[in-house]
Image (cartoon, rainbow over all chains, first blue to last red; front, side):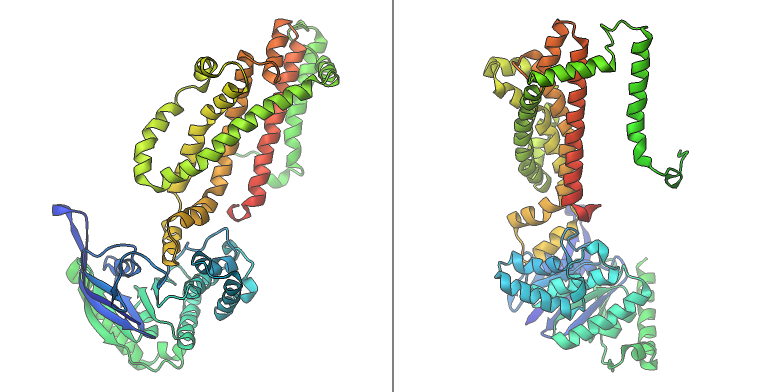
Amino acid sequence: MHLSVNGVSKSFGDGRQAKLVLDDISFSIKSGEFVALVGSSGSGKSTVMRLIAGLERPSAGVIALDGKSVHGPGSDRGMVFQKYSLYPWMTAAQNVAFGMSLQGLPRALVRERTAYFLEVVGLQDAARRLPKELSGGMQQRVAIARALAADPKVVLLDEPFGALDLQIRESMQEFLYQLWQRSGLTALLITHDLEEALLLAQRVHIMAPRPGRIVRTVEADLDRSNLAHLRVSPPFLELREELVTTLRNLDAAAS
Amino acid sequence: MRFFERSTLRSPWLLGPLGILVVLLVWSLISLSGVVDPLFLPSPLAVWRAAGEQVQAGILVADAIASIRRVFLGFALSAALALPLGIAMGSNPLICRLLEPLLGLIRYMPAPAFIPLLIIYFGLGELPKVLLIFIGTFFFNTLMIMDAVKFVPQELLETALTLGGRGLPILTRVVAPYIAPQAIDAYRINMASAWNLVIVAELVAANEGLGKRISLAQRFLRTDEIFVGLIVIGLIGLLIDLGFRAVLRRSCRWAS
């Protein structure tokens, strides 16, 4: 699997009123990698994700998955939104099964895979509950299970923990990291939270706003055997501090 | 402003029947006092007797069935066509642009104004009555469903797209279930007009039906029978309304 974003620009509106929101974005992800895009609001990071998902078209440049350029959405690129994306009339299990059933998989297989992925996210006991009966963190785990069950080549996570309380956020970060390690999924994480990005992703692209562009790429080669420990370890804090300063200067320059 | 907190009333459900009881009591007192000529205001007892006579003669049930049947046919047609059209208009801007002004215009034409035309076209049988109910409810049903579709959250649609969903399956499996509670509620609200219109149609021309019975009663100055008709019409309407609410509660537990 190889996802490449090559010289992608995006502007909204026409003619003189056209506003450039992304300027010449290029990066790539290979099988099994965990990559993050970090930027403040207005940096166009969510637009990058929507372009990869095929929900929007780039104004210039090419996005290609395994050499085939992306035209429109498809199940090879799964997506997890920040919130409100579970189908409220479906149980957790029905939500997880939905993509597979849309793709016309045989029922027995759908059932088997649904049970498997609910267990992967630790929600086998909540299978028959409606989304409104689940906590925010549980809802996002169902959304992740649903994305994985549709068997995508890459999972796009758009601020998946942005709406959660800090405490739950940290445990969800641990959960996602362990999931990535176990299942070998390929993930692209969009976040405004630098700590989250550094904690989870091997490579972090830092974006600056107006127009959105990648200004720096960090290979976050850290010891992730214990995330709670990593959070407070001096090399991690040092790196984070340095990047926070970078981000702050960029924002100041842009405004 | 709320004068009573819910908790201070031990059985708040009693209030509804209590209101009805008060009206019945005032009505009885007025007719007992003899202030109003019984020809204009029959006593509750007289109305009850008139109802008994009509039931025994088999008229009341036959009338009710005739009226309910017309409402059911006209409204079923309206509801069944409004659902796909409302979804099409709500999800496709081109179809919406094309049809919304037209539907918005027809909606403001009072349905009873179509009666003369319907009689000229289709005579005095069942068809014009059923069509009147259709005309009187179809445009409201469609526009209300269209509005509901426009408010389906973008995330739900986009999630379906990234899960491998396409056009029609997304409409039937995401849009339709999401708007189901609003559609049922739109039906419930517009059912009231259907029920109004069937009476209007029967007042104009019919062989049987609750509206027909009322207009006959007027000819013979039988105010007691008019009261029977009004009360039965009200009760059936209330039952239908409660039925819709029950369906909504049972089928859309997720939305409450």
